[in-house]
Each structure stands twice: as C-alpha cells, then as structure tokens.
Image (cartoon, rainbow, N blue to C red; front, side, top):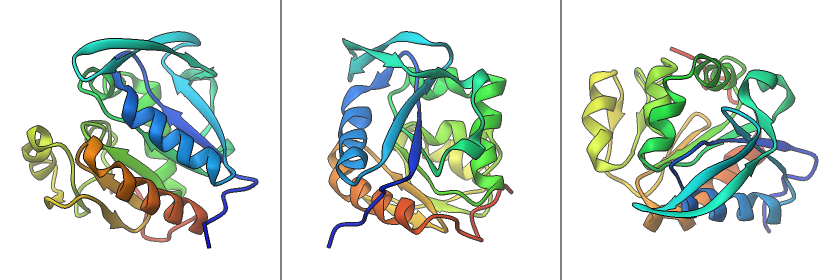
Length: 188
C-alpha cells in the first residue's frame, strides 16, 4: 500500500540552476502521494531550470524564502544541480529555513549537490549521507559519514547521489515524509 501524504504541505527549495529532473520527478511523486507542494525560491517569479548543463524550462516560485516559515510545512525537498544549492547556501534566509526543519525534527530529502546547503546549515556533522561524488569531500570535511549508495536514510534525512537514484530516493522520501517528525533529526 502506498504511503499517503494527504494533508501535508511540502516545501521545495530551489533557484536558478536547479536540475529539472531532480525537481520534477520528486515533486510528481509527492503530488501522487497526496501532498500539497509549494516551490520556494530566493524570490517570487520564475527561475531557470537546467537539464545538466543545458538551460531547460523556467520554473515558477510560489513564494520567496524570506517570506516563509518552516513551521508551515511538514517536510523539505532539496533538489540538486550545481548552481542551485551553491546560490542557496549563500543566502541567509535559505540557510535558516533549511536549518529550521532540522531543529523541529522534520524530514528533509536532498539529492545530488543539494547537501552543500546542508553543510552551510550546520546539520551534517555526525550524520550518514550520500551525495554527488564531487561534494563528498566537502561533506566529510563537515563531519559527515559519507557512503556511496543510491539512497541513505538517517533519522528523517534522505539523501541520494544523482538522477539515476531518483526511484529509490522518491520511495524513501515519501516513506520518511509520511512518518513525520523524527527525534534524531536535529541540527548539530
């Protein structure tokens, strides 16, 4: 039986440079599970999505991160792409919004390069996770236990490496989001 996310609102934090497949496929899975999904970005309006290094379609942000509160959401999805998390980790509001999910014990799912934002939020130390190969050293340097697996779950934190991992990522994301709050999901 499929997990239900009915009645839950999930925040998706993304900006210019987001990898579209890592945004679209998880959002589709969340909606199919019954979740309400809101796209949060650095500002309202459209931002540029990418298909690897090629500009793709524009994505419409529902709200600006400066105007939202993590308390209004059940969970957080962080899609990858190289430029997307690099810009988000430089934004004080995006970092604080992300950290607030951990402080509240709420589940978070991050794929590919998205764990860069988790490093900036100070929430990876002592945690086990995976990510795109090129940022694994950054995660280790931040105190994370890094493994090379298609999906890793650590107390409500779901991580995956790349688009090939999306089916496993989506399944675990929905499972953890359905479970809700995790006592071990806290900021370091």
